[in-house]
Image (cartoon, rainbow over all chains, first blue to last red; front, side, top):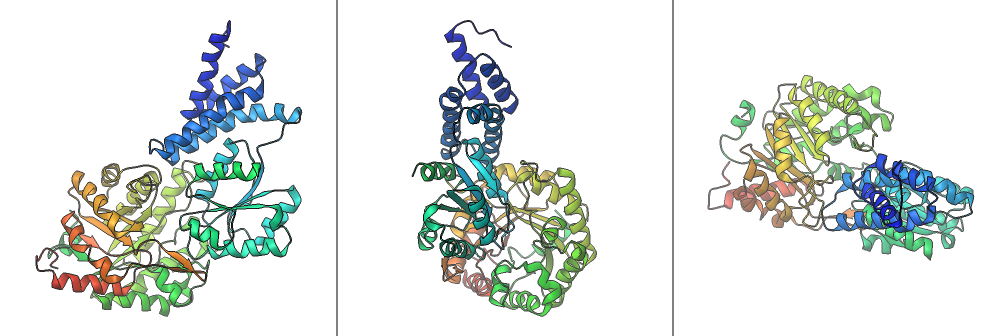
Amino acid sequence: MLPVENSNQRMIHLKSLQDAVINGNANIAQTVTAQALAEGIDPLELVNGYLVPAMAEVGRRFETNEYFVPELLIAARAMKAALTLIRPLLVARGEKPAGRVVIGTVKGDLHDIGKNLVVSLLEGGGFEVVDLGANVSPERFIAAIREKDIRIVAMSALLTTTMPAMKSTIEALKAAGLRPKVKVLVGGAPVTQQYADEIGADGYSANAVGAVALAKMAAAA
Amino acid sequence: MHRVIERVLLKGPVLTDGAWGTQLQQRGLGVGEFPDLWNLEKPERVKEVAKSYVEAGSQIILTNTFGANRIRLREVGAAEKIVQINRSGVEISRQAAAGCAKVFASMGPSGKFLLNGDVSQEELRNTFEEQAQTLAEAGAEGLVVETMSDLDEARLAVAAAHETGLPVIACMVFDSGRDKDRTMMGQTPQEAARVLTEAGADVIGANCGQGIGGFVAVCRRLRSVSNHPIWIKPNAGLPTVHEGKPQYHVKPDEFAAFVPELIAAGANFIGGCCGTSPEFVAAMARRRESDASGQFSI
């Protein structure tokens, strides 16, 4: 363990946590987090002071074409490595996750690459994620919402032929009386803002980084 | 150059086919149904699609085997039919071609992410080897590794296809980044050209992902680093959804108007991906005939 003798050194030490997430180094992210916690640094300070800014920087680099999917994935993984140490401490003192999201690729659609990426980034963003996988029926979304008291529903479709299942899932949510309770977010290659509006979704994102921002807005609403 | 490719290209750029999935949907394939299963369940419908492309002027047609690898078939509970589905796919296209067109068999991605640990390199290698061998034994005259988003996966598929001794076409989807000129993983056309060629591709290219306009720059960049023949299959634009059905808005003639530009950018094989139809192939054939420059003379 690095000796930490003054606050200046401590800052440098913690800055390496931020860099580890930005560079997608899960081992360093976890080691530095463990050291920081052992030194008595407040876990919430680690999250808000270093991890959240790190993911914001990763998102910025994605928007400017410096980062692509692989870099996003490893950054999310590093973030998660740090959070696995931090989250139990936050839970123990009654802090809540950023939000609870149920996610799945809609019925008839077996593609889960994009959805898995969004799961990684949501987890990296501090969300508790209930991942129902691919080919998820409206009934399974409904069951998960009821069982886990979920407020955010995220749906993915990769095919134009399976997109209509997003609409039928929203209709099923209405029929079950759950629509007012949840925010519905949609995404996937063929999905557009126009389509999201047409089927009455609450949010659409063209990419995984935007999906996390949407979920944060939905959680705050 | 592979001798089959050399012979095919002897008289200049070649017309390939258009979309299969959207054509099968017009013939009743339902939402979420797996198209490849129709090789066994409705072979006559699949043959109609194949035949319509030959009649429209396709000199190479593909096969309805895009998703017929073990990983994807397992997801629809049809892994045990893998040999029959691939074999039937090749036979249907060969019957439809009746010697008037070459039959190159389609091999699509696994749908799994190497980077996420969803699948291992070993599993992908075995999966693609199995499909490539089956297609080759069934009589395919070439193998088309297409719609790949990850160069690592494409490389494994190309190497597996190369082992059969058949000519291998390898094409990626470039639809990411600000200029839609990267793969989902951020790889450039130049990187793709290098990696695919090293893996044994005889022809490199791009398909799906965006409309034909975006393919000109991608094609030029592939050509800038490679002397290999180039295979281009754009979408008929990006669809909007109307009453639950995807609609593509680019018309066959608008699509065909890009053909001379693509040829000038270095394309040797041109066809269409999602949303294109035999009408698109016919429009390209007309364009070829009326093209006074003679550049597109097959």
